[in-house]
Image 1 (cartoon, rainbow, N blue to C red):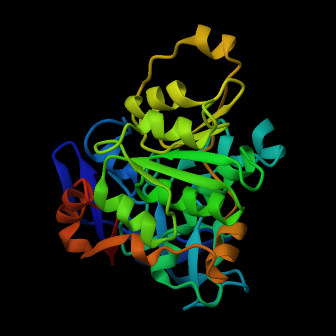
Image 2: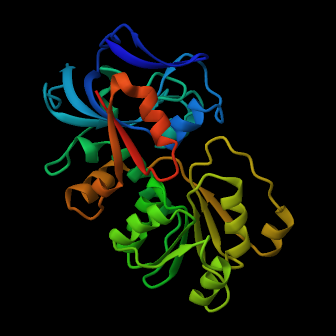
Length: 329
């Protein structure tokens, strides 16, 4: 089968063996893969991982072969990405994504940028009616975004500042907006802020054109937001979050992509700031929101590339006015 393999010499299209179908596995014929921020971080060297590796964690496809009766050939599916041991304390306490021996597709195990992928059946989810291959590639990041809201909820009318209008920032903003929060979307990228407004996120702040801190304080009675979601994955984004969050407020961190940050622990203690990180989330809730049309994802797709143009896809995905690139296989 054809696979897009990252080696020390870069991305290469290669002929690789099809993974054997083990008992209890489902073989997926991959149809579409979204290029994630983690993929880009590994590709450009910001996040270390064993090489060679096949990237791709936002996966949609159809069942090719399965011994499990609920997964018939041709059924449209997506898959979770953590291969857990099922024996450690985390696995036994329903926290398999924190398994001490886990392998993660596209990070420490070969991911989805290939024609066929075999995974345990308990990771596979059928795409419900109304969720196509494009939407299927958003299930993994949307589930993670939903978990952010679960871990850091706010009441209706409360202000949530989302720093970053990339794919994750736009998904997270939509989720908080759907719960009745007053979302402020902050970025310096005029194009992506424009996408946010098209999605109904009318309260946008362009840091290149506005005194962002003054604007946020004005919207929060001078005290700052109780919740700031940092969705840029950069040290600068975290510094902005710490600067503006209300004392006794929460900073929710998403997708740091291997970036380290300097933390003023004294300020965090004295201002009683809570910092929360989330990495995975509930696929069933993501699929439900997509099937009911509560989250818009099609506007987030910037361009599609075939597998044989994988390098062009990564180069395009790293450009500033790009939200989501898909590789169709």
